[in-house]
Image 1: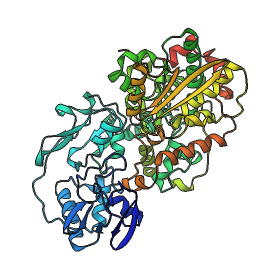
Image 2 (image 1 turned 120 degrees about the vertical axis):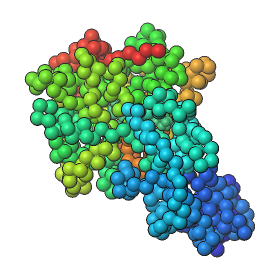
Image 3 (image 1 turned 180 degrees about the vertical axis):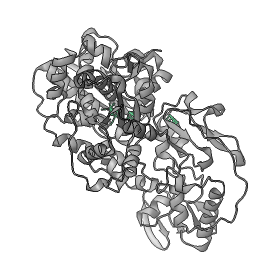
Image 4 (image 1 turned 135 degrees about the vertical axis):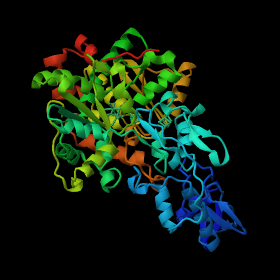
Length: 571
Ligand code: HC1
Ligand code: SF4
Ligand code: SF4
């Protein structure tokens, strides 16, 4: 331990703690812009300066030392911080009233905290075009404050290296190599850079207007489905605490927004378990293409395509739950309702910006129609609800529509890392052994450890599963498999750290809050709580799933299933 004083208050912290962290421990808030817990500690912005003796030092990189006397609230400190922020503002495209991050912008908050009302240095500005060619991520370099949080996330957390610093001095900017459009790079569309950006320099490609247009078109029958992770985060956009479940209110809001049917992607997740579980059993029997790798995360699929093309055949041929459901809406449901599928518009509300890319993939279409037409993020849905003047917090709870409104506890846990594996094991165990699983909660696959493992005994055969979240962990896992250091039968990967609960389309949580709590854990808690509250917790016990096989699909992995619910990715 080391002992120091901050503003005259004595504080004891473990060696290695920064002055910034030590200060926060005793309730002294030091403003920051580039600092992001466990991701970016570079002292780039210098907003966090403090006085130590005669010097001004960046507290986010300054290690606390014995006997140190730190001052955070002196005229000199306040002046220095203000000068730094004024300089940033002087080269910032300040359009706060129309900015997507208005009211959720760290630069706006810091400016307000420091009482900046006018700028002393208004000079030349750098001019850069907006890059909006990607299906998922838009970049506006004129709003970038060069904090480097997105670069650290893309390079270290995701090991994708799609963006970096380019040029020098006044002209420094964040951009893909050779200044290409993000769409033409290795970017996997995970959107984690958006979650890291303190300002409006990175944001999702917006598709709200297309949805409003479809809803107001009397010829169109507009069907919406919502991903598992949306229900545990949407409330945050309306001021509810992180980790609040709002499933019923979300359904009510979607009806009021004007959708013709409100379905649950959880149904598609249960169906995925039936299809992927059967695929696993068949690959285990044949000893072929093992480990079977999940394919429901479009960021992960693209990562495999770019970095591990030799392992493409290990990917499950299953479409993602939301794509499966889209395909069934335009076939089974359309026929049942007597609607021409060409007049159906399928909208998916996802915690994800990668799903916008997935939705447009050719591999995920059928008879010339995309399975999913439009993907909106949780944030975009919140925007629509606000635009429609709906008082979200006071909505009654409503139920999803049939026939795709029933999901099990196994489906809802898809939203947290380890959930797909847990759901698959619940079903595969019962189907193979014929025994009931007494305790459905497989805790070994839960939690935020980077790589998790579980072994399950299936009639004497030890089936080994591994789970990774965040692409740096996925890379470690695949490298261990390739080198022969580890062997598995099944692996689940979600590109986003924590899984979809902290996907790139979820409500953005600022660095200060992320410092104090692990958002992944809080939202996952709500996911597991929803699982516990559901009467049916195993996919194969979902009566609507049984019905669709009886009425339409036949068996899992049947010819019809292959036609509608499976696909192939090629090298
Ligand atoms: Fe996900 Fe999935 S879990 S991919 O993270 O398999 O987006 O929530 O909808 O499709 O079900 C996302 C979440 C989601 C699919 C499911
Ligand atoms: Fe990197 Fe993901 Fe952002 Fe693409 S979306 S630039 S892969 S962090
Ligand atoms: Fe999208 Fe989920 Fe994959 Fe993130 S982990 S890219 S939110 S599917």
